[in-house]
Length: 179
Image (cartoon, rainbow, N blue to C red):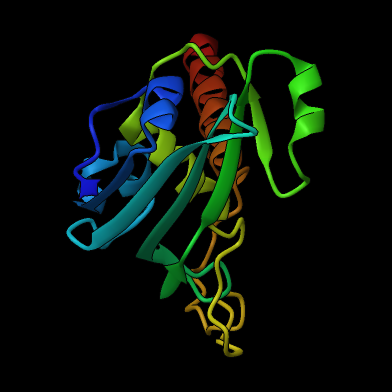
């Protein structure tokens, strides 16, 4: 039976009961994600299945699906990317238990902790976001765009003006003292 995801994840308790959770969120519910994207009102679909592997190792199998609007690092325009991270996590009491799981599992030590659901989901999404988001087509690089060049003054021109004023000031002082 599917139900909404509680605020705290308790891996061992949930796995013992074989719970399955499913919930729709919005990107704005995840502060670390919403600071990166421009589509904060779009949905995130999350499904988490808890079970015991080998009748003793609590595991989560999860599926998350969302669209993110990021800044293309080539043209600096908006790029929409569809993400569908899937994961299998095994929560271990000790490192020896890792040998009992197949290689498709990621492992985490310490099964007795409670985890924030929002932070847990956030971590899985952030791992799946490309480090350098870009359009799939060859977009125009921001470097290739024509930029109107501004006339730049020599930063030392002000020093020249100050030096000239200082010399004039010295001359006028010297001229007054001679009279």
